[in-house]
Length: 594
Image 1 (cartoon, helix red, strand yellow):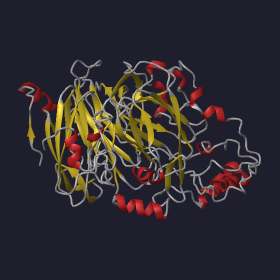
Image 2: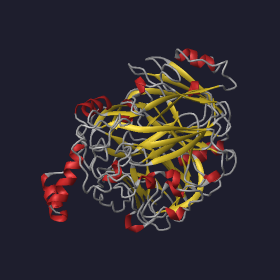
Image 3: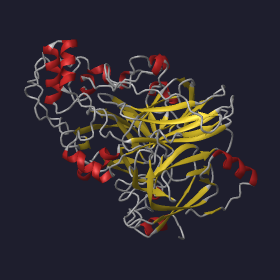
Image 4: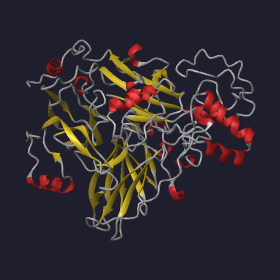
């Protein structure tokens, strides 16, 4: 049970207003959070999970820009735990990543986090220990600004998306290591082959199957883990989380993707959505019919339902293997039509084109005889001399560095620059409407001076699907050296996705300035999704000393090795900080008296 005390009274009126808007939150600057075993009921199955203050998701924490928060986290589990404050800018000792920020929180221990709130927007928190996050250890954070918002709304709701699976996180990982396609329920069948023969001819269908087979992959390898139930604010599709409104009101929906492995495509049939914030930072408004939210991202949208009827919030998984469903309605128990899932997408050879020097868009004549058993985790030394007929001429089009400055939002049309040309994953809005692209995002107020980066660091996102190993530059986390940055520099990261899966890359402690070709108006994010076969650039103003994590936010990819420690050296406190060796020491670093 949470105990709440306040060191900064906010007034009765403010308390009443927030009480109407959010059923579970706390005001003030001292919070008590317990980590507990809980029962999670998805409406389709029940399982034991991990939650905060007795529930999953945990409480919605509402902070105020400028306040100093103290958060006491008590571990009631029989195993270590931690809480990471996803996207928050804070001292590294408070970041909550075991073995990087601190050693974690032992069973029975209370650890005190103390940090100032220096930002506004929508964020979330979760465990960074083992698979506690997939098992339910997450909650939402809303930070109110000191001043006025640049956009108007009458009420707001957190819409936290998650993907609960009947299996525990440990069991899922064991199964993936034994059989990487264990949870792929959309594998192609013999019947599919004969359908392709009828459509494309025998030779073409056979060549396609041989190409995928030689690479130990399937065109349906869009999602690693299927068979989950998608939830909105802890409620499954049949439980139907509902947010109330009065017709004509402007509603702010704070979408948070806290899933372990699932990207969602979100639409609300009958309503246009105006995107106003990405990863907690205000963006120039973009009106869309649908948007994709990668794991760990947040997007805030404003809608204005004018009719006295219900609207369905429909969030399909990118692989169309499940959906989350909620409702906006003038009254409780109203429902709207729930759309059918669309046909699952299939990867194309363009999605494999991130492998160095490989362009699969022209398969005709390609000789795969020497590709059998290829290990994608170590492709630097690959000999391409025997790959007959391979066309390397089209690689430039997949490098976003050539997008050019001043690219307009209109350029994000059917061919989205953040997807490989011809990719099977390029999104299309339902009924032909506008689908949000990264290329549409523009910062409303740049946080940093626009300046040239001091250096570039290339990180290749690599993996071996057959062995379920995920890595960076072909090296797993446990075998890798830290990435070392110098305080005050500006680093340009080149993220090259050489795998066939999307990876949401999350840098802790510092902002990632995503290069969409808009110069100083490039959006600021904490998580950047890199689609298969693409290269994405982001720049980081290195303004936070200490030790940080940088990793793919797909839970099983991070655990399998797509993870790095980042060390920022040379800061003003460089002589004063050292690696904490215990939770108590980390607390001492911040001067806590707990």
